[in-house]
Amino acid sequence: MTQKTIIIYTDDLTNQESEEVSTHTFSLNGVNYEIDLSPESYDKLADALGPFIQAGHKTGRTTKSGGGKSHGRTTQDGASAEEIRRWARSKGIEVNDRGRVPATIRTQYEAAH
Image (cartoon, rainbow, N blue to C red; front, side, top):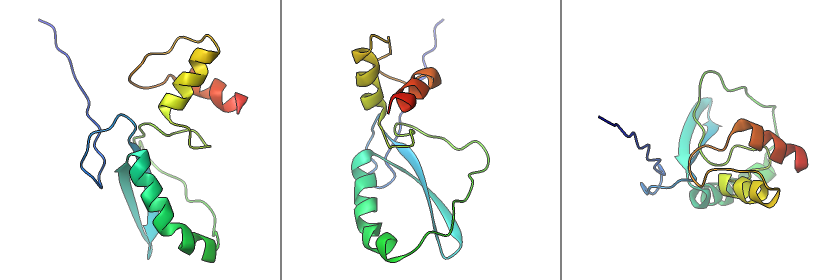
């Protein structure tokens, strides 16, 4: 018997399925929050927070503890898995159409950008 496990990622804001969902963290009043968002929902969050971020000041980064999950945008520059796949293919690197982009390919992408 063959079993097939399918993982479906869902945007917490829209409840829509997306292959490009990423986990994002933020804090407010000393409480840390984590939310899974598609790139479109993340853009809405960034647009909404933009004026407050510009008016505020950084206090340093907090480190994430434990095994958080990340789907889609995980590079430092915010590149999506699809952007990395396009880049890899343009360089002749084989990469699957779906699923996680291997860390070795992500590392090569980040080094090139």
